Length: 103
Image 1 (tube, rainbow, N blue to C red):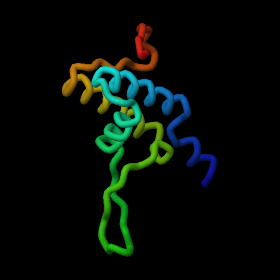
Image 2 (tube, rainbow, N blue to C red; image 1 turned 120 degrees about the vertical axis):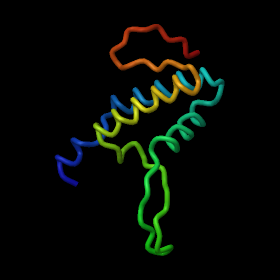
Image 3 (cartoon, one colour; image 1 turned 180 degrees about the horizontal axis):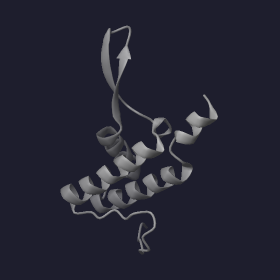
């Protein structure tokens, strides 16, 4: 892996922000944050890869470490839209100054 490849990966700050969005949505849905993370990762981070044993493509959920900065931004926007449309749950942008009650 080159330095250029590493620079393209999502940042730790983005990862913390993803976890915050998941905590907000989980609280809104009254479910465990880890379950919410798994469900949203399945919804938004699925990909296909070639399985040489099966000689076919298989679906898998990508780790956030496999996601580029640009892909993360797209996933974040899709999660925000989905959360609002499906559940009426507003997920803030990173620079918004809002008070959260996640207890």
